[in-house]
Image 1 (cartoon, rainbow, N blue to C red):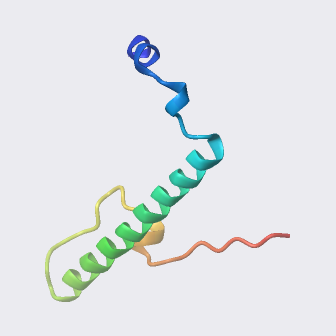
Image 2 (image 1 turned 60 degrees about the vertical axis):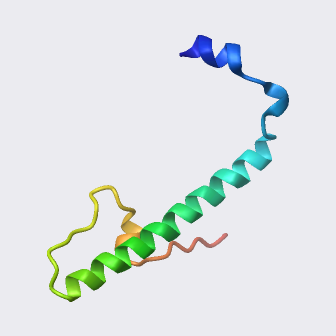
Length: 73
């Protein structure tokens, strides 16, 4: 696998580290937003009496509809 990566990689097409970091952060934010919507649908179905549970790997923040707030010191 490593040999294939080395053979086919193109460093000139790679994202700069800061841009890659921004895009990864955006992907994580989008994932959490989607999981929040999923959790809301599951909770609505449960309230309607449906036998449905959250996925085992859903974000705890999404399942509990919590938001993590960090403060600088």
